[in-house]
Length: 143
Image (cartoon, rainbow, N blue to C red; front, top):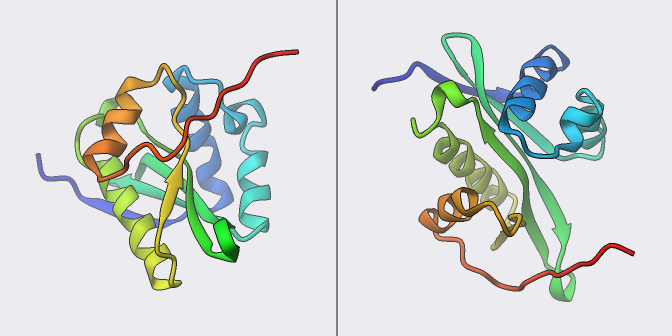
């Protein structure tokens, strides 16, 4: 299927559509819980929030930025990428991830990280198809 896909930096008028995508994903999402306020805060901190539109409708989005990693190296970080169910497996997620990687590489970033919840096998497979590998395992327990 050929999509009329366009990528642009998210604006406040995109936030409701992003929240809807988060709500339909069924994943506990800070973006959905804050009704998009977390996006405004992220943008204010210099993070990137990019939307993918198809025929003018938000079909997916990505939130990424940089963080200081090992040895004061600036490391890219993908905080969230999601695609509307109606556009699942259409290449939108891959296009958004590629956009983030190109943007980060242009800044001189040489590595990108992400965190995937243990039970999200679909998300892990998505990132593995894009060349990501397990670097560390984070474990936690409630107190």
